Amino acid sequence: MGISFSVDAGEALGLVGSNGSGKHTLLEIIAGQRVQTTGFVTHEVPVTYAGMETGYNPDLSGLENIKQAVAKSDIDSYKREHIISNVLDFAELGNWAYEKVSSYSSGLQARLVLAMALEIDPQIVVIDEVMSKLDLPYYTKVVRRIQELKRAGKTFIVSDNRAVVIENLCDRALWLQFGAAQDYGETAAVVQQYELANSWFNSQDVLAQTDFLARGQERQVDFDVQKLYEEFKNEQFQNGVSRKDEKKMRRAFFEDRGSDPIEAFKSNNGQPAPSKTAFKWQYLVLLLAILVVGIGTGWAISAQHNAQDKNSSAYVASSKKNSQKTASSLSVAKAASESKAKAESESKAKAASESKAKAESESKAKAASESKAASESSAKDEKTQTISVQEGDTVGSIAEKYNTTADKIRQLNNIGSDDMIHVGDVLKVPAE
Image (tube, rainbow, N blue to C red; front, side, top):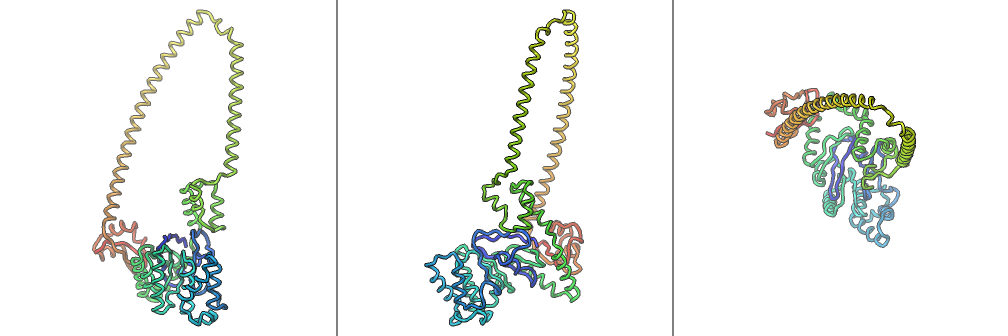
């Protein structure tokens, strides 16, 4: 449901959320195990997926699965035997390495998929609900290895039902609920909000819980894909893509669903490939210019011949008529001069008025901007904490509880009325 985020090299991102929130689906999309409904997944290096359902053949032995995974990688052939030995050593399978994976316990399966993911050319590693299957000694070993790989610039995306796993491994966290991002940021803060939401849900009676789940699932089903496309389209326009390419953008978003076309545009030094349409328009403009020049030249030659034919009769007027024309010309010139002076005076007055109005407008805008900036600075400097909206809470009751004003609550959370807050929402309040 419109989830966007980025993960840097050497960073680990954790996913938290209840069952059915979308964590597994999101990780499968990132790893290429599933095609997204719309949108794009962009990465510059291979993604390795470590999950309990895919990534191995249950009818093959552990060793055969390892050899198959190494063969599919880009590792040089002369290094492959060394890598296979590393995976076997890290997995600690013993004689189980020669047995079919279908006979493994969930713990042994977890060891196998993690060993392959962490030892066979790891770049971006997706770990999907695997860590909770490990015993404590092997879990500690895996955590140490992940920390080593992070220091070497490798990237991890980890999902686990135990919040302690996410807190131990991840620098940032993403909280998913009903397929949408609820919070995204520093791990401890996100996990705290997630646990507060769980505590609130568990405190409700069965009817309230059922209603909450029903409303959330309804929002998830009624998700507006067209609205998400409009956001993507505007982002494309801001990155220099022209509106005439909207048909291509729609096809890329709804049908192709490959890498982000904005990234391809940036990799081309911000210059879109020239299209046939552009050349066609340039050709038409050139033709129009030639036609205009030709017509203008013909008209000038015709006018020159007409002027030569009439040249001999240009000065046959009598002196009387010349005198009358001179007087009339002086009168007209005087009237034109007065009219021009009047027009210039009116123009100057109008310009002065517009300049004054513009100055007043700019002054008001500057004052408003300074006031807004001062307000935002004050709000930013103030220490805040986050709380979860409970049943029966209003802006006023929350303000009274945290010894502040309703206006302050609205200002910190950009809300206008009590109708804009709902049970389970996360709000900012002044720190006590």
